[in-house]
Image (tube, rainbow, N blue to C red; front, top):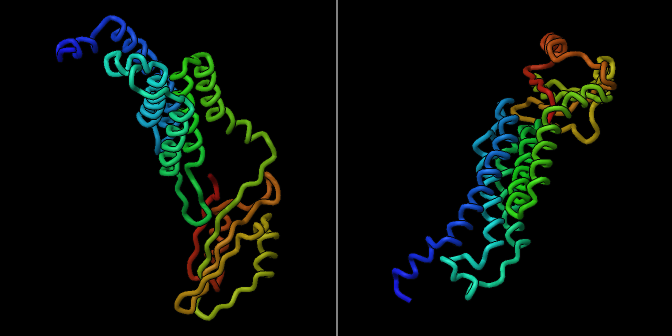
Length: 248
């Protein structure tokens, strides 16, 4: 077979039709990924529309090409390419997305953020895979469900019984020795309890530093951050402190 014949095979009717079908699948995956990513971008998250769109589209591309081995390399791939196992492609996609999802998870002390974004990136990848294998209705349903979870679930959480948590760091003045039992009693008086296993104690230059998570006793109990800050500012033994909502 001459070089011209080999090159023309890439532009044959069946080859172009297959490419067109693949492109339609990629466009659909891109649109669905953008739809899910818009919600994250609207709320100022690290991964936005571009990330979701690319992940979803790439997942579809990596999956759909496994369904057309006979059209690989201008229609000559089926003669010498190994039989494709779509599950191996999906495994590769899921592994790669795992690293991407880990990149948006951030931790600072007891504060962990980005878990929802990472989980939704996994969901976006699954949408792309569903588009790639041709389960279009399932892909649309997964996209709608993913958006619904991220948009409406937070409103449902506000109705359900919850207990908010506050991450607290206190650095005491030199030679001041705090007592754990006294600290727990102070927390209880303000509607909080120290979460089990969260207390860590350090020391530098004669100053002890205590870090822990204060968990509200109920949904409506617990002083506000501003009230806690005012009380800590007036405490003689504290050199500095930091308060923040412990959330993910």
